[in-house]
Length: 236
Image (cartoon, rainbow, N blue to C red):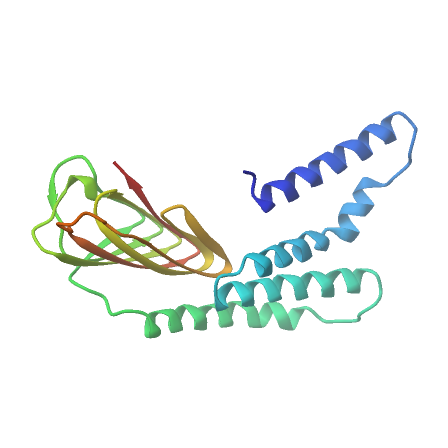
């Protein structure tokens, strides 16, 4: 099934192609460049509405309202309905985002175990067998790949904290364990077990429960992404 974003993007390209085709054959004389320059904020409005409709938490609500309001204000200014100075908005945007990043660290779970950092480089644990421990991973302008199918589970429960700052973290978990995922993204995205969230501010929770009578290890994954992304996926 196609996502709303794919329908929106596909519809925009189809409409642009139809207008160009009709113009080339002299059937219409529509200024495509003028339409794009004047009405591109409609994309922000539609994007904001999509986020609001699909919202799963406060983060998506804030993102949707920001996109919707920004689109309305920009298109209103272009059409002469508003006389606004957007410089104040841009001056406030980045400081507010930095504050939100700080709040995500203050309100989120404490870091656990050893710290592993990939700074402008990569860190991989996916080729050979390795012992899983409570750890905190930082991908700062770098990438981290962890394959827990190669991991040795010596304990009953584990806690992993993954932070991506202008970088990415990818975790593959075996499909026969219990996994709890929770994360926040600011100008980035998080995807847990096929469920994703992102944009200006996004949050996501997901879980995969091992239903076998003998149970199994439990892995709790906490994630933060700022201008980056974290993905957790399950494989056999």
